[in-house]
Amino acid sequence: MAIEVSALSGDIIYGAAGVSEIIQNVRTLLTTRKGTQPLDREFGLSFSFLDDPTPVATAAIQNEVIQAVRKYEPRAVIKAVRFDNDPLNGKVYPTVRIEVRQ
Image 1 (tube, rainbow, N blue to C red):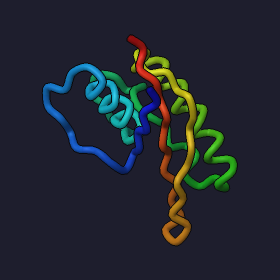
Image 2: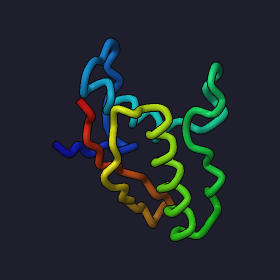
Image 3: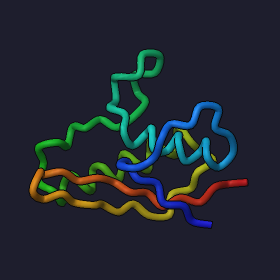
Image 4: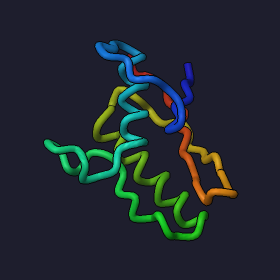
């Protein structure tokens, strides 16, 4: 079963377990800037691609998302990474399609 996880949607569920926990963990990875997690400064995405052209930035984001999910949430297998653009504001948001390992 494929599940879409976006950086734009979702509430924090305290005490989440199972699939809900995995989805929340992936969403947290997508929205956390590397260096801001006090006990694990490597957690999250680097955001070093902020001023890069969109094609370069999306390639960098895709690579970072894949590496971060593999490291921090191995129960999720990435099937695809796509991007939603907000051209008026110059923003690109990643959405990840995952499958959960049982």
